[in-house]
Image (spheres, rainbow, N blue to C red):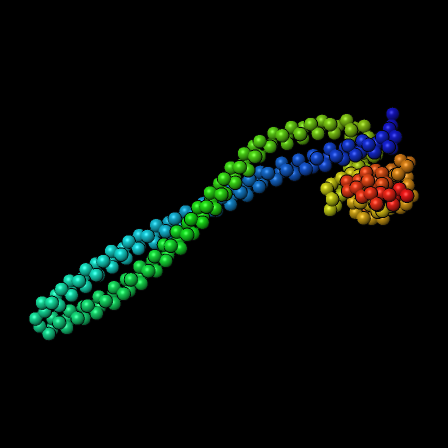
Length: 259
Ligand SMILES: [Zn+2]
């Protein structure tokens, strides 16, 4: 026995709710592993960057230690030259030691500059390393949380999908085959709203999905459950004329449509 249009409308709404929930679950199941993969790759990049900074810092510290040793050696040389000045006997020796002290003063000055620059470099790298360590730590914690959340959530999604798929079968199967076809045709049209096989009318003759104007006679037919009509533009079946039954209830528009 073929059911009446108003019975089929009830069934279509139920089916549409099921299909929309299935769509959301499918989207969630597709997005979760992608998001986790993206997080893992961000974490890998952070780890690589942090390791590079660690190596650079080790290199800078080693160069600093060498520069400090060199600096100490130069200062020791200068101290010895100064000591020699106290016991110098000839003019030649005095000239030679004076020249040596001048050269040493220059080298010590250069060495101090190298050490100061080295301190700056080490300080900058230490700050970078701290920041990268924190970001890497946060990313590690975030990833672990999201992985655990998805491990807990995935079986719920899978179970709900099975439940909905089982509930869908008899609803879809009970529809008149032409109505079922028109419903599926509506679902194939991409709109700015979630995929759906049905639509509503607001302000008397406007399709809620695509804002196309619907013939008042069609609106009347659908409202009275006299005949099936689908919006010409978005191809979705009109299930009832008043907007309060739609997903975005609006009392004023509903009253206007009814009155
Ligand atoms: Zn439409």
